[in-house]
Length: 166
Image (cartoon, rainbow, N blue to C red; front, top):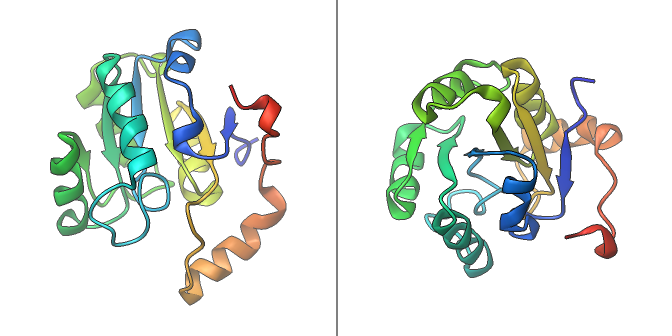
């Protein structure tokens, strides 16, 4: 199903670093807003930054793909020392395909993590890569975000139980 993620975690910080090796994932495409940080926040919170540094030190390749414009994505990506694809046009595969090209791995070895069904999960499916859904850090208050989240609600996966979080 186009809206069903391959994996579900409460937060990006709940994905154990050995998960990627166990699932034969050699590279990760990261969403920005509400996955790594809140909207318009220029840095990740300490919990997500610690996760990022652990995963980066394991040797996993990473890149950011965001629908945001370069002026939003560039400072954040530079802070983390990552390459990025702005204006990704998710859920279209354009941004994902560009990220896969830059990562230089077969799509079967690449996964993407994000907090939205209609952009992140469906974009992964369109690009032919695995999707990792995480619940948003916080829910946006803007009108269009509320509309999108309303329609997304029946498609959301169940939250993992604490015992299921590895």
